[in-house]
Length: 589
Ligand code: NFE
Ligand code: MG
Image (tube, rainbow, N blue to C red; front, top):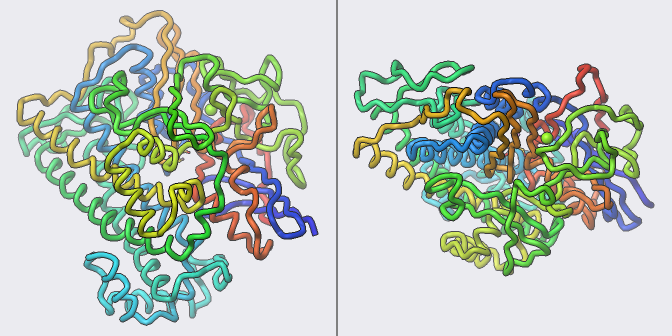
């Protein structure tokens, strides 16, 4: 029987996402639709403000990928005003972005995605001694004694026996799609809990450079921490006098020493826990290397400049587009070209002033709710009409996937040595071909491998920062353009970055020293957006096709593939109903 399977809300993500899937008589998904079901707003409230303040508002688009919208925003203003930042500021930004990746990806793996693969309740059947042997065969992580696993099991037992699974409630425990032996389940549950404590520690890197986490402070022209080589100045120094923030942070050798230790703590967890766990768990789910392929087009904007944002050749992650999985040809991306990046609203609950069928480049982007067609509430999505609060971004008219898989493919295609080595290692361990990367499993493994690449790069940026300071260069802020009267009457610019979930850019138009237009096109919009005017699906929609649901009432297969993208719908839907009305009722089906 043909069926419609509705998952709303998708849990263990950020924000509100609904998936509707139509299945055929064999229970296979023939058509899937992805809908952002809640609106919120940032772009509109930025208009009319001082562009130097924009980062503080824009950063509040999301608290999960904290920092990224702050960075994209200051880069947009710096690009518009041709504003150079000092080398130390570049290095500190790289370290802060890298710390965000490592934190975010580890949390996604253990706290958002692992339970699609790990049966928590089955861990009660495990023999702690054998769990310890398994853990020790995978890595030299210190917390792997039989006693440690016995303790974890005891904690879990209390949860399960009380009938209140708390953070583990509502899983599809016992579903036949779970394949790990009880010992592997126990190990993963132990690491889930360890990762919670670890992430609390490593978030401190942001507090040292940016004063706090989430939402560390930034400043147009650099970073708001003044470097002092005198230990007594810690916490009292005067950094750049930036507007709208909580004040500058002073950074001394005590803070820098702490950063050094945090980098080691991050790297150890990635090497000893995250990478081995990913490969061990993947070994039980190799059939997922042939499911969830997606659209086969990938895009990166590039990030982690060695020199400056105006020197893309120095980026650790290169920019480009891959079409139809053809790794031999990288197409250049131009974020300023009118006909490359455009947002469409043909199937979104918006109108554009010149009609619903055209695409708009973000400099001319419109964020208004003049939409007069049918809107929520709805019984089911009207996928022939409009069905999402997300827009549909396209590159030269094509849907592209962004994120860890796009980045790892780009590095691989460009011949990056460590990436080639890591992919070679993972594929040979799993005995899978390169084509296995284009899958749900490939996407999840790519996230792990890029974490390894980025955490390894942190030491080099740290060493360079220390060498600069020791050589007498303590500059972190360039104030030459801080006076708005020095700006041109009209300026526009784009700030881009690679956020953990993919390519992110903010476009700004500055007129008479204030923001005239501000548009953010974010990773989850690229991946989760609805069909476009030509009927082309977005990446989530394409990736779900062909999945066979074992039990439509427990659609774990949908969760596996959607979670492999790490959705963030707060980022994706950042526009607001100007009247502040409730626009949709979220229903759980
Ligand atoms: Ni809110 Fe985000 C990231 C951005 S969205 S999580 O990473 O930008 O896709
Ligand atoms: Mg937008």
